[in-house]
Amino acid sequence: MFLHKTLLKRHSVLPGFDLALGFALLYISLIVLIPLSAVFLKTFTLTWQQFLDATTTPRVMASYRLTFGASFLAALLNAVFGFIVAWVLVRYTFPFKRVIDALVDLPFALPTAVAGIALTAIYAHNGVLGQWLPFKVSFTPLGVWVALVFIGLPFVVRTVQPVLEDVNRELEEAAATLGANRWQTFGKVIFPIVMPALLTGFALAFARALGEYGSVIFIAGNMPMVSEITPLLIITRLEQYDYAGATAIAVVMLVASFALLLLINLLQSWARKRQGGLA
Amino acid sequence: MNTAALPAKAPRAVAAGTAPRRIRAATAEAPWVRMLLIGLALGFMTLFLFVPLVTVFYEAFKKGWDVYVAAVSEPDALSAIKLTLIAAVISVPLNLVFGVAAAWAIAKFEFHGKNLLLTLIDLPFSVSPVIAGLIYVLVFGLQGWFGSWFIDHDLKIIFAVPGIVLATTFVTFPFVARELIPLMQAQGIEQEEAARVLGADGWQMLWRVTLPNVQWALLYGVILCNARAMGEFGAVSVVSGHIRGQTNTLPLHIEIIYNEYQFAAAFAVASLLALLALVTLVLKYLVEQRVKTQLRCDGDRSE
Image (cartoon, rainbow over all chains, first blue to last red; front, side, top):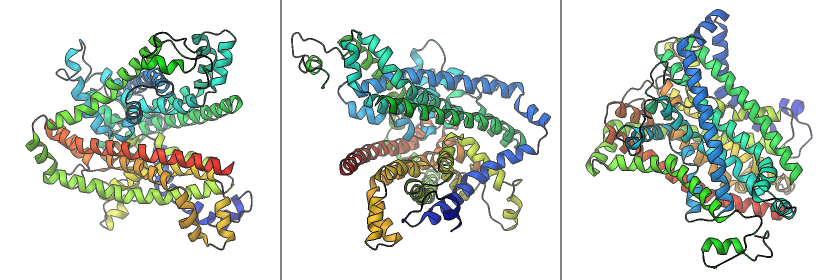
């Protein structure tokens, strides 16, 4: 009855609050919170200098540049094309639209290792696409980017799509009546409504790409200083039994992800407010 | 199409290409813009989605049916399939029970710290799979908090099946809860209150009112959870010892044979997981339609 008395804001006739919340909290602590806290506690056994040494060597810095840079550029491409895909799915009719709509979620459903070997085969020098390209994709930073585009694709589409569906068409009619052409209506009416969702989708794709491992390691070639991503470096440290080094790098990545999570939550509440005001 | 009252249904007719000359609605794009956008969208999806998907099956069958069958029926592949199923069979029900409990507390009660709990539920999605594996190594590994205790009692967690199950549970943690919470919030508490007034006890209410009301969303969450559980690579890779025939799940098995340049065999095993992904998408689509209909019905009822 402890949870009941301390946390509940209003009395309820429904049963099971203590049991449900108690179980949820216990489970979340055992599976998520306690193990996750191990990363931070392990890092506290390092001195500040040791922490800096582990997280700022040239090899680690190169991996940050690649991971953050490729993730950003992949999320950027997804923002542009994800918006177009969402627009086309909401506004136009064309053959196989439902099938295509359903397939947008493929990167969520397809295991990352499968995506990884498929992309590697496609972009290898004798692959379906690779043989026509004048430059190398597989085993270069460009390959990392291709894999990250693949796994980030659904995020922008699936955040923009519902908002686009809810855009009040009367606003567009009003804009047209007032003499706006289609571009002006898009730029000044539709885009501002959809923008918070677009930013959220971009941030989600970026966050997912930062931690991605499975689809990248096959196509990246994993050359230190060139095409080695940060998550792989964590594994490399672990395989060398450098637990402290692995954990220190993990803390840097976790802090970046948590900052992004916070940003995404703020974006989403902003988006809700914007939508609420316009509906 | 209430937008184009005067130029009666012009956009549709133009799209079908039947009418010789029509006036375009002011809220529709020029045909060439529409074609360009559809072309860009389909081109992008072809390049990044369809080609990889087709490649998996093409490469899998390139060396013929015999190679395929041999690849998916060799003992190591079979034991990988078995381990993948074990991990999913344990972690999915665990996360299902958690999802129902968390959704019940969050959707039906007002309490302090609810937003914090919601954020915590989403947390595993923003943690890199590699870090998800690392945390269990830190807790249960040889040099970890409980490592020596487990060694003394002859229990192996890391580089063994329990570690794989734990890591899988972590990465699939939010799926069911996330699907249930918004729906149960939208459904309110009137039906449960009615059940209580009519004399149902807590469990009767859960089995006869609450769960039937969310059955499709529940199934949807389970499908997504299962797909991720069977396909997880990064987290499992860290905690598995990569011991052939013992601690290899399907994705890890693919990695090993791929790195041994047995490409056809790797793609053959990969095609099993790709097939699972396609089945997942079909089920997801069907269930999604059900959930949409249900939300619409619930909306009508509450009006």
